[in-house]
Image 1 (cartoon, rainbow over the protein chains, first blue to last red):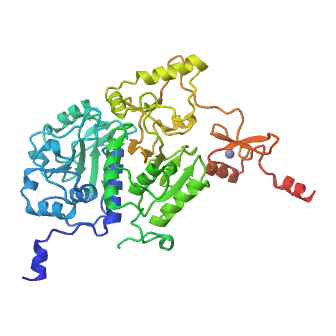
Image 2: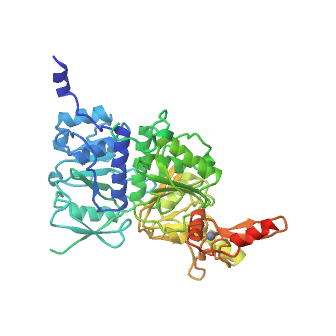
Image 3: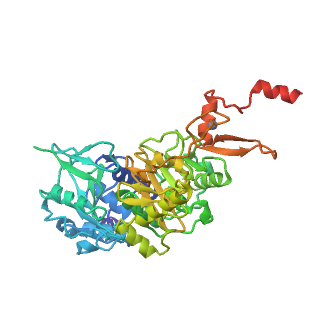
Length: 207
Length: 305
Ligand SMILES: [Zn+2]
């Protein structure tokens, strides 16, 4: 056995500069959350994501996850030994099978998701004890868009993620009805991220 | 290191960037994201010991440490001034532990950490305003038990708060609270805006900049996203009114700004000047002159006499 064969099975590297790159990813996430539906760039971040995660979703894991944040994975990610060993090695976050236990949920194939139900929405006293759902995206410049209104948005913001399941907008509107309880959603395209916090009202445009 | 801080000379390499360890930053960053998603709600966080007393704004310091990056330009103000002991010490703390550029100019700053004031110059959407908060719970003086105040927020039971304000009106004919005047955020949570003068309250409403609040001793983080409704509590027949000043700034003649009273001698002479020192200096540099501003010719005559 040689070093190079050993390294072939080792988890892929994390950030080149963990301190400053985690900060840069966080600022993109903070801006995304503060300005729902706007696209925040991660172009300056260099990463080799473990398949089938994309770069932005991997950056979110490295930036926010650790032993305090149980992670729920969709089938495709849960079946990837590469993803499991990457999460174990870089942030030591527990993987959970139970949606309501998850601080973060990572979904690589949003179209195949059966429902958004079951994730933690917090309690009246602690609405922050909720799941942040991360949906991997091919692009955030899809032809079909919705309009967003609410905190962080001066008038109205159009938003066009490429990969959402058919029930998604209806369930997101229901999620907003529970406010201040609810899930928050992050959209992770390769080089861009966007956010849809529970405070945002979604208006579906007539086709 | 692929990126190096700008000012490497004063950057103290013995500490992690911005002093806090990465695990603590992650925990604070997660709390900030929740706070932004639930405007005005107080997110609990595991506040760390900082190398300064609580009264110095350790909550604000921890927020700044979790947010700041090597490209930021930091401004720190205390009661509107960049030059108080507290402001100078905190600015030096971040200079030492990050090497970032600092400024006293509100316009130039990307991050502004503040105690007790909102700058007079309007902030923009690329700026973040970080408040130091001593007591984050606006209902605390009505109900000392945390479990009860949590319940009151959960059920939007804010009647007691209105009773307290109404008792003020019954006693004094007006609401006597002038600092930390409670606000309603996004029509949902009653929030303590920190001990800013109520003069500053209207600036929070629909502000283009993100506002973050940190209470170190009380271990709470809360936020107001840009363009969010922030309404000072009041009554239809006793509407909220910010402080008004009868005279302009004695040094720069600014009106509609918050003024501090400065005692000039032991005979009781005094003047009113801008509390926001950067704003006042900026106006004087543009040639605005108040009635007490030093007149170069006049002061020469005095020194010769
Ligand atoms: Zn002035």
